Amino acid sequence: MNKPQSYFHLHLISDATGETLLAAGRAASAQYKNARAIEHIYPLIRTSRQIERVLEEIDAEPGIVLYTVVDHELAALIDKGCAAMGLPCVSVLEPVLSVFQSYLGAPSARRVGAQHVLDAEYFRRIDALNFTMEHDDGQLTHDLDEADVVLLGISRTSKTPTSIYLANRGIKTANIPIIHNVPLPETLVHATRPLIVGLVASAERISQVRENRVLGSSMAYNQSDYADRATIAAELTHARQLLSRHGWPMIDVTRRSIEETAAAILALYNKARQTG
Image (tube, rainbow, N blue to C red):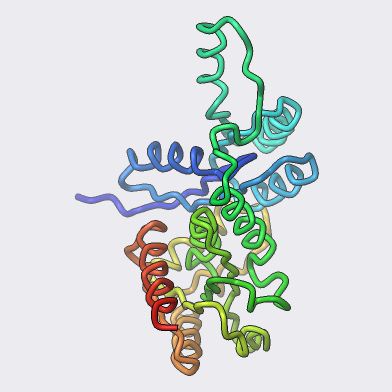
């Protein structure tokens, strides 16, 4: 008999683009077929203030923490914060660096992002990541016409991880939640440059993810409303109607991985650029 799929939060903290960390986290989580990771990716984390904000988000949605931060002081802040919350925390690079140091007889130079070639493509991706982080969850809506892609969807439709995945490929991505009785920004309605895509999923899938968020969170949620399938179904109906009214394409992420969703968005994006 198949066990029902469960969800857990996986927090990935990187001082660079996060690709190395993302690959390691997914390789590990793939070994657990009945548990699906809800990924929270924090790229370009290079200051203590950024670490504080990340730890606040982790406290709100506790889970496994992996990081690739080469600065010893910043790494210590992550370790200390996770220990205080009683959460498992692993530096993915540290065991590897220790082996290299032992064999080569010299410590590493501790250079942030040293694996990346500093060419035009790298800086394009960094620029996209900065834009995407600044425009997460409906922030900074005044310049949406500078985005390449804008993702819309109700809560827990994988908008943020998909945005960051696209940003790692140099696509400036903003994401905006669809909330009943909250109008979309006028700058979005009148935007002409970005591809605007709606993300939807089954009410069952979203309910499972939201239940997991409520159970693992120290924040106050009204579970009867937040994870109720009838309420979620109504949210989805509103979202579909809104997207249809504006003629924006929809992607159902119920059975899609982040990579599959991003691939579908990129196909739409490339097609729009060819015909635009």
